[in-house]
Length: 139
Image (tube, rainbow, N blue to C red; front, top):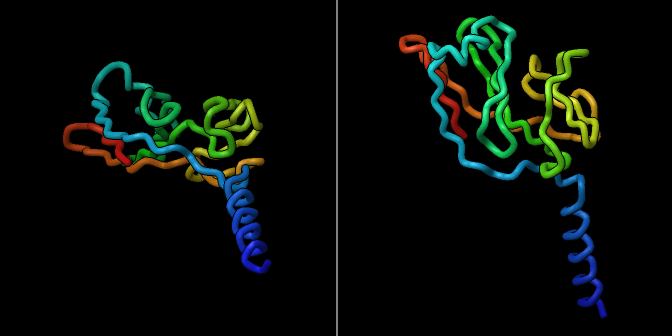
C-alpha cells in the first residue's frame, strides 16, 4: 500500500511541476549578423532606440543600451509562449504581451515589471563589432 502512495505522490509532483508556474520559452537556434551600415538599420543608431526583427521563437527585439552596448531579447512571452509576441508599449516604454498582460522592461534587461509572467524574456548574446559596425546575435 505504501508503494502505491509513493507512485501517486510522484505523479502529483510531476503534474504540478508541469503547470503554468513552470514557465519557459521554447528553444530556437539563433545566429544572426546585422550590418548596422545598411539603411534599414539606421533606426538603431540613437542610444535608447529599439528595432524588431525576425528570428528566435517569436521574433527578436534589439535595444541600443549605450554607446557600444546592444541587447537582444526574444519576443516570446514566457507565461504563454504560443499566444502572441510582446509588442512595444509607448505609454510606459515596456514590452507588453496582449494575451496575458505581462510587461517587461527593455531598459532593465527584459525583467518582468507586471505579471502573471514570473521570468524574464530570453536574452540572446549580442556582440557589437565597432570596426565593421556589425551586430552578432546568438544563443
